[in-house]
Length: 172
Picture (cartoon, rainbow, N blue to C red):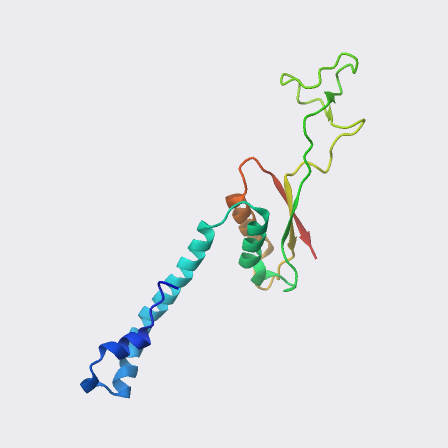
């Protein structure tokens, strides 16, 4: 990675040959260890930030990202997060309060409290979400259920489109 600094090599290059010695090199490397830890933390942060900057709301990228983020918390390491598209209900054919013979197919001024018919004598019940996120249950020794749920909702809300709704289903 571009921000990775090899402190051992740098110390070996900067110490003059006439002052060299194994003990001096090891002592200087020990002094530089806190900076090495700081650099390692920065490299990890830069990698995560780059991944987050490249994220989109595409299903395959969101699945990969969520599995990468939450894979360490799964009780079964072989299970994965999957996202299923919800169905589109489309424009209602007519409303229940309308007379079918004089019904306007779609009018924006309709009363939305009246249930709409999308298909013949059928109201949609399972199509109320844009997509469904199937999530494996977490290992509660690593993370609490409430924390897991709130983190999951945070990352999904961050990358989903604003007009989309979702449902989280836990699988065993």
